[in-house]
Every structure is written in structure tokens, then in C-alpha cells.
View 1 (cartoon, rainbow, N blue to C red):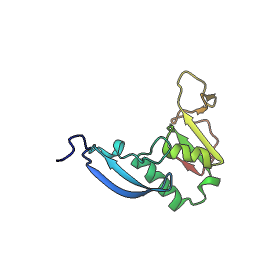
View 2: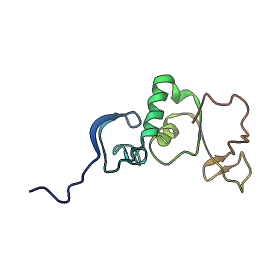
View 3: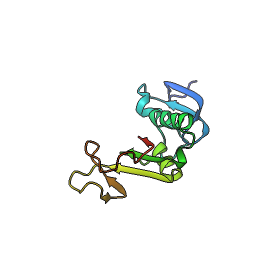
Length: 127
């Protein structure tokens, strides 16, 4: 007799996560993989776009931990956590319209992407 409570996965496969660098079982009960195909081993999970980012960083910027990296609107999960913890010159930003730009607010530098206050050529990589 089939288990009525067993989850029905749209996708279920083993793969490698370039964020946490583990072989994991990727599963989703949703067809919208963009937001639902989460790595179970990453800190707070990681989504496909974060895994693609880290794969590209490792392929094209192998020395990324030593580069100056600006990440706009980082999340408290996956790739953002790895960048924050492993990149010595990492600058995370969010936009707080009621605060002065360039000021640190809640641990993030306040930057409007349309009018950034960074000097030209401040970063090797911008996310």
C-alpha cells in the first residue's frame, strides 16, 4: 500500500552545490525551481541563482576571496554568507532612502545603485 503522506517531488536528484561545496540531494515539490530548489546543506539554504553565481565566481574569478566585491541587497543565506565569510574585501549594501548614502545602517552600507558614493574602480566584482 502506498504511503498517502509521502511527498511527491517534481524533481529529485543528487548534485554538487558550489556554494557549500557538498554533494546533496536536490528536491522540490514545486515546479517553480527558481525559488524552491533549495540546497539543504547551505547556511539557510541556497537558490539556483546563488549556486550559479558561486559557480561563475569559481570558474572566472578563482581568486575571488582576495578580490574587492560589492554585493547589493545580500540575503542572510547561501552565497551571501559565503562571500561575507570568505572574502576579505567584501562590501554589502542595501538602500535605506531615509538615511544618508555612504552611512552604515544595520551592518550594511547605504547605497542607491543609481547614485553610488564609491570611487570609480573600487571593486573587482559587483553582484
